[in-house]
Image 1 (cartoon, rainbow, N blue to C red):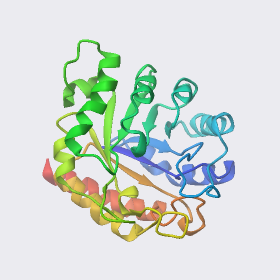
Image 2: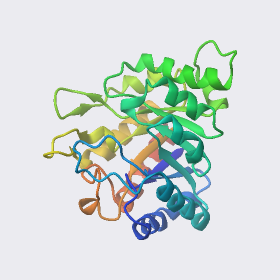
Image 3: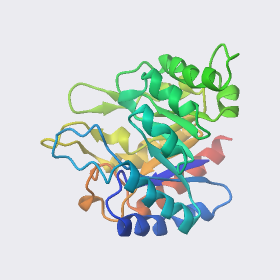
Image 4: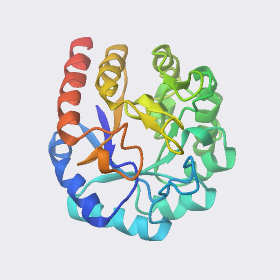
Length: 267
């Protein structure tokens, strides 16, 4: 099982190190393929005043420190094609944000690097249309590819991530059929914390209901997933971005125990 965990955005080196330390038990386990996640820039904040992060150069240096100190594999997201090459020098996974999942130049730039490409499904997307986003990355790495399929994308290190669909204003809903559909095209990660986000519902920033994340994670595991994405923070209420959605390390521990038990039972 893949596990992607860490704070939404880089707040400080001390904060990053504290969260990395708290997640050490997951990285030590042989049955988990662990990736530490944090963003150097959150370019799609609801308002101009929203905290974005330290930026490309400083942020990558901080993630590189975590990589060297803890030995973790790193996932970070990018918003512009020019960020792909420098980010891939540190990150083992380049993530394409949901709003940008159809951006051809961005997908191709990521696929030209050595990193795993993780494409998050847009909140507006039909899950079956994610085959075309996956195929953009796949054809960049294998010009003979004709369609995206699970085995081929796994071989060429391309993932898709489910994070809910827009359901009216300020709310998301997860259609578990999406996991089954997208898993025809590529390995699928379930983003439990962004799936409980309430976009723009907190007065110029996104709200959320993190209490529902464990339930959705367990449901996704029962359907069948390749990995779990769960943003984590020592103190979510004090987080500078997406705190309403995030889990504490203790909550992640309890949730992931259930996810693994369900997955093993399903197998």
